[in-house]
Length: 623
Image (cartoon, rainbow, N blue to C red; front, side):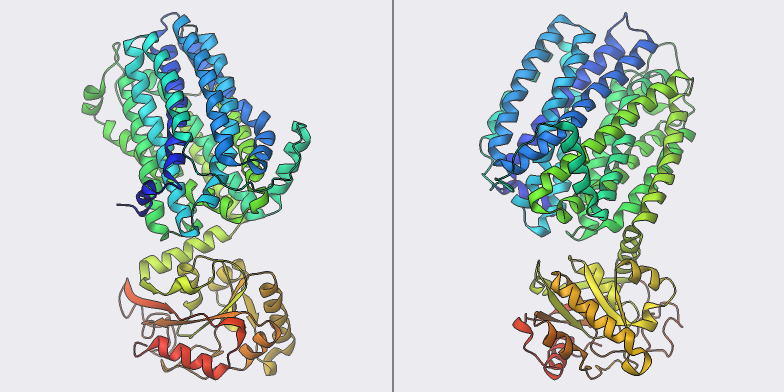
């Protein structure tokens, strides 16, 4: 069972989770009831009119995110979040009463128009929803919390879809009653969300939408890794909106199937997102692991392409149901592609959301998430326009999916070139999860924030990568410049902003620059790691520590945490067999190694000899 499931037993998380789940359920209950009514039950609506109404509906729901997110972000930063959520849930009750009337009147135009009000309510809720998590959860719970939110959201899509199909089959009055009752239950759940201190109680609210929109977009751009993560999230919503919006007509007109097959495929996509979210938590080791994002991006392209080539079902005059659909030759391939698109979507989005939350300044976090919603809105409106334009010029829905999959490959490559940290983290993750199995001990001793100096023994060329893959915080490594310049490793180290250093006899200017960079990093509250031996061991034994560590601590007397790597001696990247990397995997794949952290040494009051003894004792007899 995923660790994040345990969060449901916590009052810090459970009421919020139920509130957002019921809100997402009600959105999808209404929207899918509307979709089924327009696509399958409104006899007077033609295919072209159905295409138009479905895409216009998606656009109307998205538009308020662009219009009202600047105000929503300010409100979420200024006011206590639990109180704000309760007011937003009361607004939902009023909107659902209007929606109930529209169902009773069976007016497609009125049903679509009310989506604008629903989008407004969702736009107000979005910044609160994602900025609450870093306040309510511990750092090692953040990925799990986001996985639960993503799982809950898509579980709500699935449940709303199934309930919408059932309630519409029972009549409009049943659907009208369902959306109102769900809104009331959501408000009831919100009443037990614990209070959280406002992030910026002194903030003055500005209702100038254009000025505030530009302001929060500027705030988001202040941290490029955050901004490009926002762009990545927005691109995923372009993909998701395209799939979900076109799926009803894809099922009816391309697969020749009825609304129950639409329910089946959307259920598979939703469950895939949930599975991918939990898989992300499992693979990331409960840390924000953006190295999984390129894997998700690759999958979105490959399975999107395969969905195009998996066509071949015979379309009959009468729409077929799920059993007949499954009996078709290529239906399992369609189902597999849909599930894998969902799984890859979970791997792609969960780390990006967690990174935005983790690296945004607390005081401006809600406004940055509001900026994310604005950009999301632009991409989702673009997705609706893309669907309208492509279908209008005669592009088939499968071809539309193929074009989008190829576009995804280009967009992902562009983002990863702008922020190579994603590829760097992927390489680190692959190293730690394919070549080695790492047992971690005592890593909770490493401070969660503020400056600290890590000191570790130096056994192989990948010591820094192992540490980076196991320690949650970003680390600035200090390393011998010749290792820094190694092919492939150089890309990783430069991307991680490692600090190259040379001996005084080799390059004194580089050495002095390195000590200045170390001091600057510590003064900025960063985590710095140094290998005080100054070189990789050639015998497996621990070399004497150089005096450079004393120079660092004299200038910046910060907290010190000794570390020891155990079991790397004799591996492919060590010098146990002469030159490193001369014998291919002498200990096989997934060999077990250990990373052990010792007790914190406060104030930098420790000599190189004492540090040597600490690391020696941590390493023990296992080289």
